[in-house]
Length: 469
Image 1 (tube, rainbow, N blue to C red):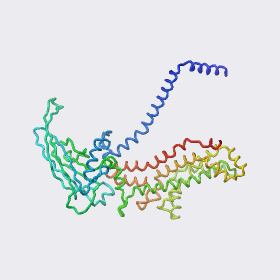
Image 2: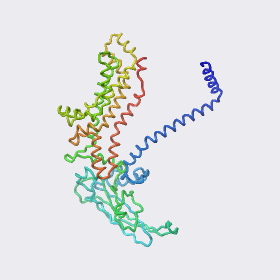
Image 3: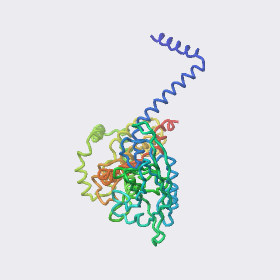
Image 4: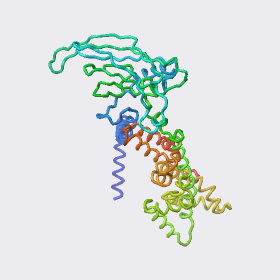
């Protein structure tokens, strides 16, 4: 049987050796191409929902149906227009605004049938609050208090289109209105307004064909063209939802912005849990892997059993203990409730695979058990520690249950997942303003992505071989 197998492998090797080098190269390239295509396909499927959610977070209306993949926030032409309007409004082409000295040129083009008269629309800068949630309650400055509008020019053109029903050419007229929106020079207050909303009311017989900046939405059955901000700046146009989630998440009692405080709270909880996890799981894992003592199996069974109990079963008793210790509404309460869990088991498995010969060599040199652990084993456990740290950081950062139960006030003490719930209640469910909720969710995943990017090389590095050398 062995001889036949050897003969078969010899024949296969000789067949490959007889193939031209170019043919072997083509086979290798074809195999690599198929592997590459498979990975591209898997990546496309896995990242598809992520990409759509990110695109929706940039839109003014993420719930539009059908969903458009080409929209103003990703159009370079619109970026240029937005940057120019931001420069005119506040001298800032990036984030825009409306400030003293602002002088904006804005054009509207309406069309109608040749036998219909095109009437000048009624335009205004409305007194519109910046959002539908928390910031709307404390807003005191509006662009309408400082804006002066005047018509500076008109022009008219005619064109023909084919009527879809009759197939004949139909004559149409278009008329362009050029407006000038100036910051009132008589205002004594030197105030910069972040947004400059704009509306234009026209009869149903005429249609808005073009404008300096694409219209945000059509209201009143198409009669009112509405812009949320005609001086956005390039970045203000693209990342408007992200700017809003930072500016509009405020404490109604103090006026302080909350989102970065939520991020700081989650970061404190995650780092604290990582530190406690590394200390406890490395010590406990090494003890279970190397120490021989009475009741070792029982301890291991208890650790495994504790992993099978849902936190909802014991959360009442944990809550009472934390309450009696006076730790409610503190970050430490969330850190201490979930430190070890599966990390002890993972570290135990790593230490069991670590060569005992290295430890024995260190003991021969006179090192005791603690010195072996801290100066020999632990430095070589860096890949396992980093993988566990990333898992602990991600779990703590995304943890919703314990922060929701243990930290309820003040608003500045909330963690990011609980803060996102408040955004959902204020903007999403009540107002349908889901772009802001999506933007907050995407900002919240940035620290986890940074963790993976910084430490991914340690995940695939095995430093045990380095220690053996």
